[in-house]
Image (tube, rainbow, N blue to C red; front, side, top):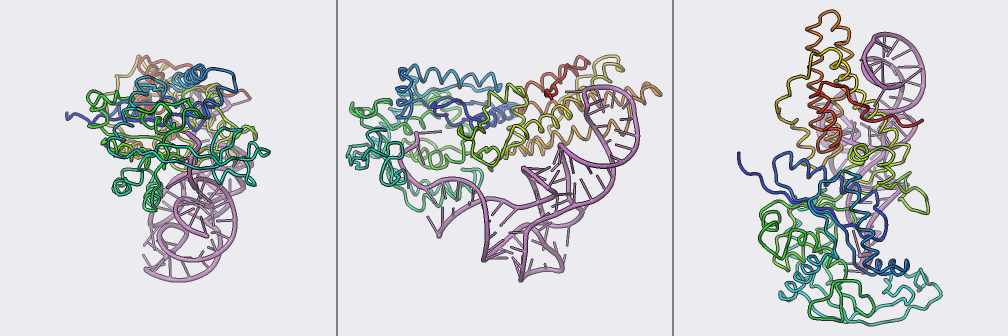
Length: 479
RNA sequence: AGCGGGGUAGAGGAGAGGUACCUCGGGAGGCUCAUAACCUCCAGACCCCGGUUCGAUUCCGGGCCCCGCAACCA
C-alpha cells in the first residue's frame, strides 16, 4: 500500500476575551471530524488548535478585572482547553501564543520578513481616544467622537509603527488565489481575488510599548511589541516546531497537505495577510483554507443583550457530547450562515437521535439479544460508502450525515417490511438470519459514525460484538 | 454606491434541466421488536417578469425583498 500524505489541519485560535463561543465550537468540531476522518483513511494527521492571548483588548480586560495579564490568559486557556473533553476533541497540540516557543517563532518570522526587506518603519497619524487608549477609525466615530467616550475629545496623535509590505505580494497572492483549491467555498476565493486585485495597502504590525505592552517584543527594538495579528498568525507553523525546519514542520507543512478552518470573517487575515507573511518568509502557502458560516439564533446575531446566546457548554449539558457534535455538523450549513434555537435543537435531537438512531439500535439489539445464540461474526472491513467519503472530502458534513441517516431510515423500514420479530417465531433459523443481517447493518452504520460521533460509534460496536442491547444511547429529553 | 450570498409546502432546512427531498406540525390507517418509539398513505411549496430550451423551480437577463462584507477589528 502506498504511503498516504500526511495531513495538517488547524482551527483559528480564539481570542480569549470571552468564554468559548458556539461558532468556535462549530469550527473545532468540524476540524476534529476531518482529523478523525483522515486518520481513518490512513493518513498521519497533525491537528492544531489553541488560544490567541496577546493584544490591547486582553490587556484591558485583565486590567478591568484587576488580574495580571498572565493570570487572566491562564484562566481562559484552561477554559478553552476544557472543550477537549466536553466535545471529545482529538487535537495533537494546543498552542498558546504566550508559549515561549511560539514567541520565539513569531520573532523569527519577523526577522525573516525584515531580512527580505518587507518590514519598515513609518509614522502613523490618527485620532486617539485617551479613554480607550487606542486609535479610532473613521468608521468608529459617532459625531466625531469615540463611541465609548462621547464626552472626550479625540486627540490627533502620531506614532511610529513598523509596517509590513503587503503590497509587494499582490502578484503572488493573485497567483495563489487563482488556484481553485486555495479557498473553499468558491465565493470567498472570488472575493479575496477581487480584493487583492483592487490593490493592497501595507499594514501596521507593531504597537508602541509605552501605550500597549502586552505583546511579543519586536526583535531589535525594545520600544515596540508586535501587533497581535502578526504574532497570532504565526501559530500555525510554530505549533509544528518551526523555525526548526525538520521534524513535524517538514512532515506536515512542507511535505504534507495543509488545511486551515476559519470563520467567514477571516478571509482577509487567513487567505491574504497570513499567506503574504509566508511568502515573505519563504514558506509554502497554506494548501486550502475552508471558511464556515456564522450561527445566528432566532434570525439574529447571538448577543448577550438579546439573551439568545447558545454556549457550547450548555449544549453539552443538555444533549451530551455526541449529540452536540451531531447538531453542529448536520444542522449547520457547511458554508452558509445557519440559525439555531433551543427549540429547533430539541427537535433535531429527539427526531434523529432519540427516535432515529437510538431507537433503531435498541430495537435491533433487543431482537438480537433475545433470539441470537451469540454475537454475529465481526463484520469484515468493507469499503466505506463512496458518497460518504466524497461528502467529507468536500467538507459537506451535512451531506455525510444525510447518508448515515438515510441508512437508519432504510433499516427501520426494513424491519417493518420483513417483521423478523414475528418471523423468528414461525421459522427460527430464517428469522435469526434476518436479525443477524440487521445487526450487521447497524454495525456498518456505527462505522460511518466514527468521525461524527465517536462515543456512539464505540457503544454501538460494543453492543454488536457482545450481542447485548445497550442502555439508551440518547435519553429522551425531560418534558 | 460597490462586492458577495439568498428568497423552495404551516415552520425550519436540503436539492436538481425532465415523477421536488428531509425534520417538525396537521389528517387517516398499520405494527408491537423498540426510548409512547417504528411503518404506510393523504393534504400542502419552488418571489415576480422576460429569455435560452422539446422541457426551468433549477441556466441567463431584469425587478422586488432579505442577509453578510466594506481594511487592522484578534
